[in-house]
Length: 163
Image 1: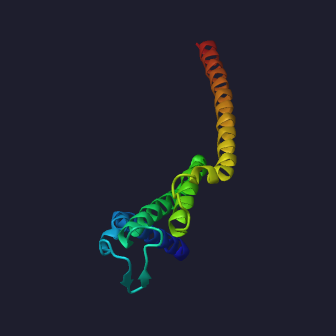
Image 2: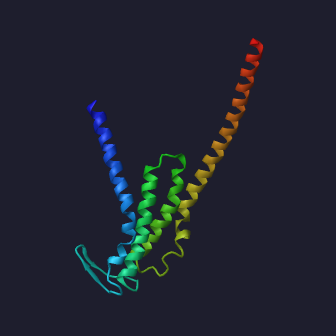
Image 3: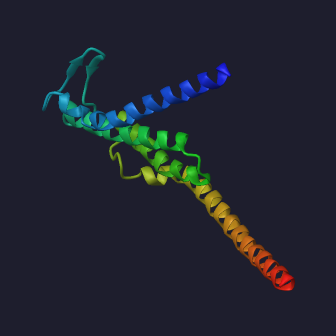
């Protein structure tokens, strides 16, 4: 009995923490506005932030906050989804990860331009698997409709025989 209460409490706490994080996401998205405009460096409690290949620290943090926000949200969506199609979420998640790595690795000249092509080897098997699952589910659904019609016909036949 006690373990059930503990599980319910843990689930509730996890849900509250997830909700707080999701509500705080817009603030993470606008975190870049705290950086000094046009600054070459920003000394923070965590260390010094430099713009890398970007024009200023604020532009760098804007790109970093945007990409990391999308990675976090799609990651949470994937981890909390219970649907069979949840693996489709991996497609945008993969693209956002490639874009985030492009922001962090500032030596890459074009951040968002070629990420789709680099992520294709990961995306294609997922797409093929999802198409196959969709095909099998559609085929099974059509078989179930036929079975349902047969059962309805049998019920009608039995009811008409009784009358």
